[in-house]
Length: 162
Image (cartoon, rainbow, N blue to C red):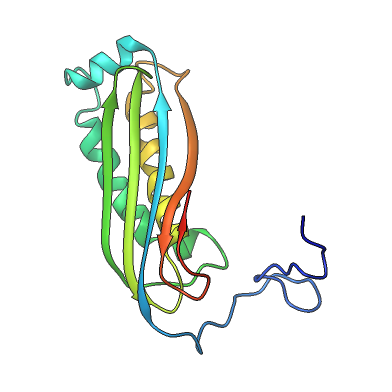
C-alpha cells in the first residue's frame, strides 16, 4: 500500500482544493478506453424487450443512442473533465439470457492530451440508465451492475487492462 506522501490525487492542488489538471504540455496521442457493465432483469422483462413488446418502443436503439450522446457531454456532467474531440464512440448492447439481461460495452477513441476513460464510463452508465428507463414500466427491480474500465491505451501512464 502506498504511503500518502508517495500518492497524489491529480485533481487536487497544493491546498487540497479541487482543480482542473493542466494538460497543455502533454503530447496529443491516440487514446482509447473500453468500459463494461450489465443490467439484470427478470426473464419476462428480457423476453419482452427481445420480442419488441415494450410500450416505449425501441429500447436497445434508444439506449445505444443515449450512450453515444452522453459520452459527448461528459465534460458538462463531471466538473473536472476536459472537453475532448471524440473521434469514435461505440456502444454495444448484447442480450444475455443467463443473467437475464444485457451486457453493455462502450468504446471511446480520441486524439488528445488526456484520456477518455470517463467518456467510456459515462456512455456505458447512461446507456444502462436509459435501458432501465425504457423498461421500467415492465419492471422496477432491474439492477445495473459491474460498471468498470476494461482497458485504456495511450498517454503518459501507459496502457491498462483489467
